[in-house]
Image (cartoon, rainbow, N blue to C red; front, side, top):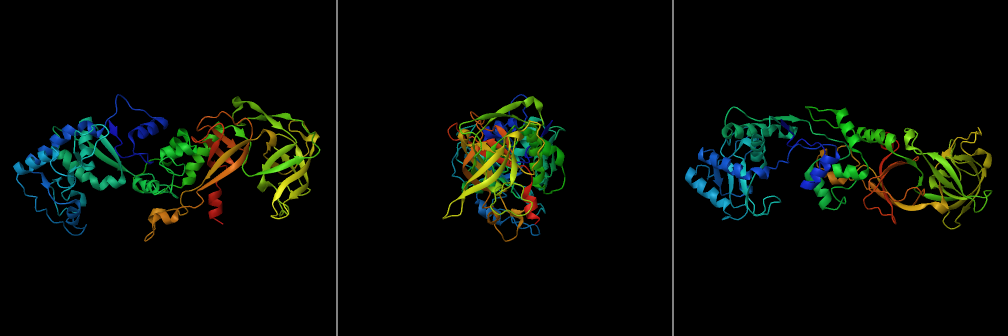
Length: 496
C-alpha cells in the first residue's frame, strides 16, 4: 500500500471538501473510507508520551522565535534549550497540563530531543506539539494541542500500514526525522518508508501554496478557483478537462530531479483533447456591423454547418443568415498591407458556411475615425455546398445581427510575464504579475444556438480558441472563459 502524502503536484484548495471534489473530478476515487491525521490524535498523543518516557522529548517554555534563534546554521551547531534536561516526571506533568488547556497559545511546546549539532537542521530538536486553542473541523474543541506535520506524517503512515510514503523532493531532508520517529515509536519489524520525487514546476506561474494564498488574500486573483491560478479548481473553471491534465502528467512522467515544464505542453494537451470533443460555433468578440446591400430585406436563410469535423456523430446544426451580420473588427482594414486576406475596400472573402461577399463601401465616424459599418454585396451563386468552385483567399466567421446573443467573454493569459517569477534574486515575484492576464470583453455576439448552457460547457469559437461557460453565467447574461487560443501565440510573440 502506497500513500502520496504530499505528492499532489498541482496545488489544490486547502478546504477538505474542495480536495475531495478536485480528486474526484480528476477521475480518481478511494477505497473504503477517507483517512485523516485527526483520526489518530489519541494515538499520536500516546506516542508523544512514550517519547517523553524514553527521555526523547521535553517541554520547552521558550517562544517559537527564541527556539528558532537557537537553531544555528547549516555550518554552525545550535544551542541547547535551558529546558532540555527537565526530568521525565516534570515533562509528563507539563505535557498533560498543555493538553488540559492550562496554558495560552505559544506558551509552551513539546520538542524531540535529538541532536542540536546535527548537520541536518530538521534534526535539531524539532517541535512535536504546539498549543493552539482553535476549533478543529473534525474534532471540534476536544483538543487544544496539535501535532506538527513531521511528527504526524510518519506515525499516521504507520497506523495505516503504508509501505511507501511518496513525497516531493523538498521533503528529502525531512526523511531522517521521519525515520527517527518510526525507529523509536514503531513496534515490530514493519516500518513505513518515505520516497521522494520531483514536484511539478511550470514556467510563467508559481506552485507554492503559501504564495498562491498571498495572491488570493491580496486580491491579485479572485480566489483559489480563479482561471489564472495553477490549481485544480482554477484549471477546471478555465475549461481544462480531467483527461487533458492526466495526459499531460503521463507525458512528463515522474522525475527524481527538479525541473521546469513549459506550460505550452499543458496547453497542447488541452487543445488536443478539446479539438476532439468541442462543437465549433460562431462567436464575434469585437463586433463590426456588415450590411449586405443586395440581400433581400427581411429574408432569413438557415445554413447547415457541421458541429465538429473530427467527430461526425456530433451531427450538424442550422445557422440563421440575414442581411445584417457581425464580423470581427480586426477582419477589416481601410488601408491593408500586402497579404491581408480579410476584408478591405474592393476585396472579397468567404463567410464560413455561407457566401462570398465583397466590400463596396464603409461608414466612418467623422470625429473619431472609427469604422461604424461595412456595406457589402454577396454572390448568391457561392453558397457553401452549392458546388460553385469560385475561390477567395480569406474565410471569416460571422453572426447574424438580428439573431445574435450578447455575452461577456473573459480572455485569460499567463499570470506572470517572467518564466521564473519566484527565482529572481532581490525581486518580489509579484513584480512580474501580468497586467494583461485578464481582459473582459462586453457586448460580444454569439450565434443563437448558445442558449440554456450549463457551467463548464465547452466550445471552440471558430478562429478564436477554446472557451467554456463560467459558473457566473446566466441565461440573461452568458459568460465565457477562454481556455486557450487555437495556437500558441505567446511563444511566437516572445521570440520576436
